[in-house]
Amino acid sequence: MTQTVQVPVPGKARERRHQGIYDAIVVGGGLVGAAIAYGLSSHLGHIAVLDEGDVAYRASRGNFGLVWVQSKGMGMPAYGQWTMSSQQLWRQFADDLLDLTGVDVHLEQHGGLHVLLTEEEVEARIGFLTRLHAQPGMAQYPWKMLDHKETADLVPGLGPEVLGASWTPVDGIANPLKLLHALHVAFDRLDIDYLPQHPATKIAHKDGIFEIDTPRGTVRARKLVLASGLSNKMLGEKVGLDVPVRPQRGQIIVLERTRRLLETPIGSLRQMDEGTWLIGDSQEEMGYADQTTGLPVLATLADRAVRTIPALREVRIVRSWAALRVMSQDGFPIYEESQTHPGAFVATCHSGVTLAAAHALRYAPMVAAGCIDDDMIPFSTRRFHVQKAA
Image (cartoon, rainbow, N blue to C red; front, top):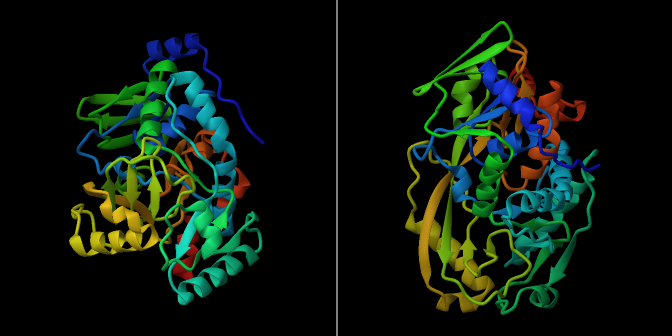
């Protein structure tokens, strides 16, 4: 079931502004917070987004840009369902953003590949996908294993070492920087107040109103959404939420632009809409401080890329970067309303692009209504307490 985002009535926004109290404040101006604020604008009159500024970790700007379903949900079928629901809403989401802002986020949903180089990788992949889809309650979608020839039909210049790939028709890509830009342009169109250099330092809850202190003053709202990535742990404590998140470093190599060749993305290799190549998929437990790149990891990424498409050896590296993913204790998203501070919600995940449509068109309406749907219960922090008790 889809939902069309409507522009709110301007009069409501002006009324709330005169009262000095927002209907909702979203803490975090990255992809997660921006998508939720955008979605809230259909249901509430006046919204503000508090953003820390360029001193933040900025996971949204280090994103690979996959709209990805395959591989999601092992150990939590609800995550497979949530990811699939977002994939199904993404076309509407992208079209609505284009109509509102004029910014094309270049959504492409032509399917996706997970390339396999050895017999061991092939066997492991078949076993993984079989177990994934056998879970009760898991979202079901077509997938199949391709041999070398079938993979070569989708990947021009495929290397001889590639034995095959797993393929699904539901995967895709978008341009993450254009998505972030589109959402921020939407703030202006929808009368959402964007407040940069306003990190939340203190949060109080008095008479049903949240008071958020920032270095530039105090702002007030009837609802509060914490969508500030790794800062959710610290801020959650202020509203009775235990949000166990940790940083996980990922590194990306950027190659110069070429003629567009790769229409079907690979989980670790894609070509952007303007021709730039991205190589990625590293997962490193490095702590908060280390956002530097490392040659051993970059070399491993590059090696696999050129074994997949040997012609990439001739394409020059432009730059590389590292960014910190927001990972929960078990790697799955966290969505919850505080029991001690009603009206305070949290949204934490490491798939800000894939889940952007679900955040805007499914989670935001729940926040506006003040009631999280029953099918979101698996994403609450109560799952961590059960594990500790066991």
